[in-house]
Image (cartoon, rainbow, N blue to C red; front, side):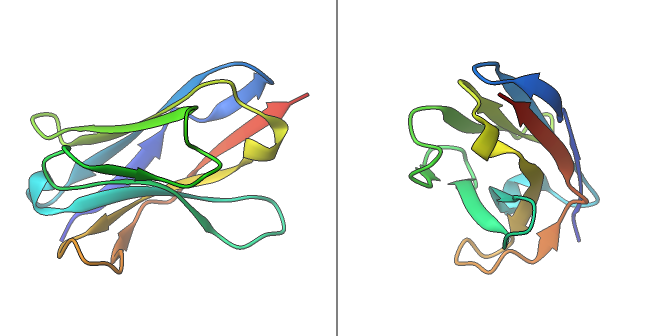
Length: 119
């Protein structure tokens, strides 16, 4: 089974950009559809963006459209989330998740990386 480890979080100001990475190991990365989720303080975890096995199809939550870009490099076993024009409401713990079937649910999760956006 795949193991996931996020990195790239931090404290930024509103309007800044961050690029999150999710390194996969333990299995063939291209065998998994991937997604980013986030959990804001005091709230439920929510979907951010997803990408199919080959990286040709993406889907975004309304809150991420136009500002965030999900991508993957199957040769480097890495998932990315480029986040631009960050807002205080983007403050959350961000998780990557892997789905071996492409039909959900996401069975494997990383430990999360904190993103804090100050106003």
